[in-house]
Length: 133
Image (cartoon, rainbow, N blue to C red; front, top):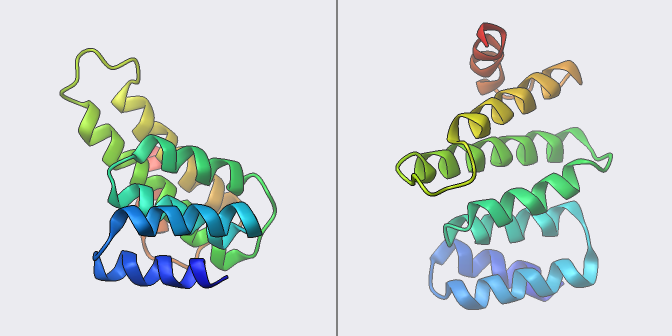
């Protein structure tokens, strides 16, 4: 449990990203909670490893959880897809279509709205964009 909190501290202060990643992964391996998965995804996001962070979040988002985690997890997952698309847009050798990542992000928003998660203001903007697609 100490690893979880110390990892968050290191992540916020940006003092030691490698140690923050190690501690976040150790806490997730030991506790296997949505909150620890979110911490690992945040560390990976800071390292620019968006695809790995998306994979971790997607595996956790399939499990039932409370609304607060769903909103945070969905928001982070959408943001990661957007960032990954931005990095891949100029990579002609990539096997991943950046536009598909953005469509996936819109589908996440639409799914969240369908589940009744309307506690964040960005859902309204994404909802309008999802209806256009």
